[in-house]
Amino acid sequence: MPRLMGVDIPNDRPAEVSLTYLYGVGPKTARNLCYAAGIDPHLRARDLREDELARLAALLDKDYIVEGQLRRQRNQNIIRLRDIGCYRGLRHRRGLPVRGQRTRTNARTRKGPKKTVAGKKGVKDLR
Image (cartoon, rainbow, N blue to C red; front, top):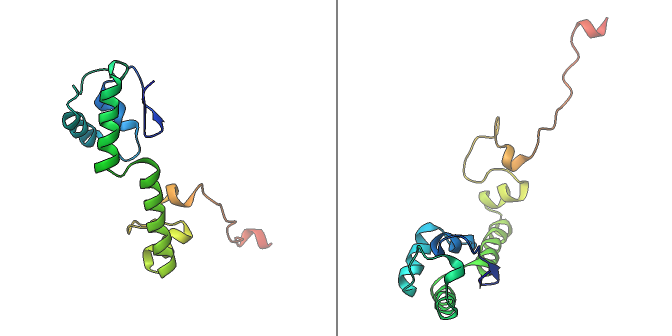
């Protein structure tokens, strides 16, 4: 299995699909990387030579922010928003949707599973 930027990319997939296993590399970026490195995008990852992998690694290192560096940058941006106390930072801190989505219903991805609250006692229950 070839390794790029500390990640094992799958052998049996084409090079442009295998590159998308790197955090921060999508289909378009993977295709651009293949053409910039002079690699056939349809070539299987197991068939890539060492010099081709080295060219890909050099391009990724020089021109793109990927993997750990991108994760770190993203987390620092969120921490900065929390520290300055802006609205988006407060939403991050409370674990609520940040981009204006409704929260009365839905928003389960951010809020987690439902927490059922006991309802009011009805008139019949008081007798």
